[in-house]
Image 1 (cartoon, one colour):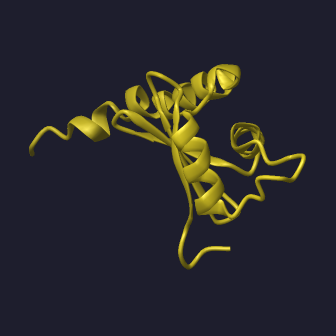
Image 2: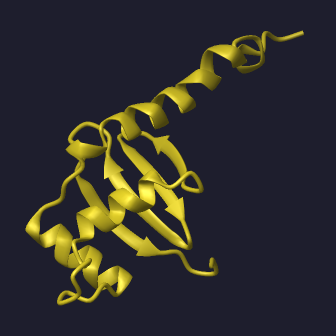
Length: 106
């Protein structure tokens, strides 16, 4: 019977997901974006630039902090999914790369 590495070491891999999520939430104040990124987020999510709560970084932070947000890491990025939105954050620089409305989701 072949050795099943994932099965034998499943407990080794499971905590990383929780740890990654905790790292992102603990570093929420570091999350930022570029000027171009802010425009891209506003355009993709349809945020009104003139509204008092139109800051795309603060909008994304609030979504990420929600207990309903599904946060997972793939490679160098974190993906945060909530209310039909996917926010992509670089895991090293904490830069919000983009945010999109997910097709077919509410």
